[in-house]
Length: 109
Picture 1 (cartoon, one colour):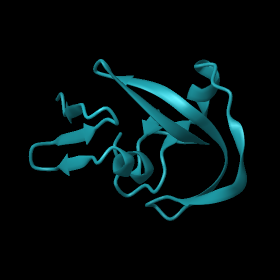
Picture 2 (picture 1 turned 120 degrees about the vertical axis):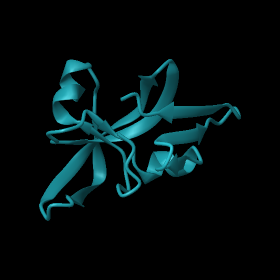
Picture 3 (picture 1 turned 180 degrees about the horizontal axis):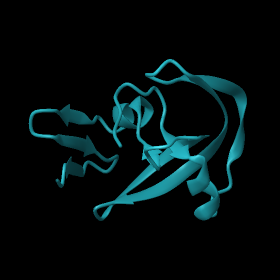
Picture 4 (picture 1 turned 90 degrees about the vertical axis):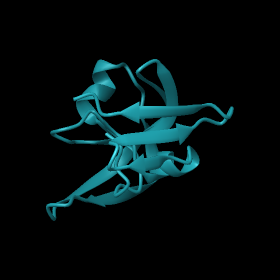
């Protein structure tokens, strides 16, 4: 999921072990607030994870968090580095990779 309301990118804690990722401890733990008012402490991060979405490979740091609805959330840290443009009307996210390649993700429903 792309989330412009999330300051960082996250991965569901169960995915970390099932994918064989080795998280590192954050120097400073963070407290993450949910839209429903809850807070979760996050103190692990998977550095330089490679994600494949529709044949495009993305690199990002993913903070490890218990979530119920999503495996990965790409937040503003990733969106800003990749100059992402979210078009709500067309339901697309267009991002630019460091090599200049542009990729557009479109809702597939």
